[in-house]
Length: 120
Length: 110
Image (cartoon, rainbow over all chains, first blue to last red; front, side):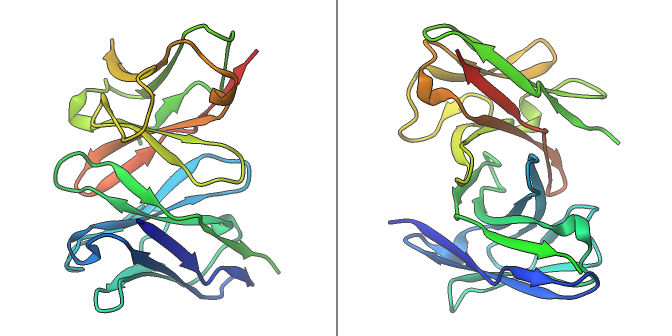
């Protein structure tokens, strides 16, 4: 079965850092572009970042550019999101998702998400 | 900055038809934006419904359809059922590896 499992969420103080992980299985991870999408409590989805299958091309929303870094380890079938200089408005459930960048631009599959809470 | 717009809420009667839209504060949505639609119930991950404007994801009933209506992307649900009561999110590809989600529509079936 295709599966994405996020981990690494938790409570962090403003200005702090956190690294999220997303373990993939059931599909060819090395050739799949990946993305992070977040959802603040009671709000809609917000695209955060995307990364090509090779890891050479990265893309960020303006709201996180310069603070977040997306990366992957294809030997471990794992996607990462390093989050620095965290702000209260970064509080959200963070989902990892596969993304088709070449043709359909769809997000699929989706993980179950990991909650990040930024608070003092 | 261009913002993606959706109806915050929408109501439909059981068995009725609901057409949810996805627009832009500036300009028109076309197939070049590769609109896609996701269904989400509270506490759950999004589920892919429609992508590339009008392609149904695997396992999605054919009463869900996507299109371009006027200057917006649209998700139409025909024969609405109680378990269609969910939040529906659209996303547009803005080019250069950037996507923008709308604010989501909360659909009530009543």
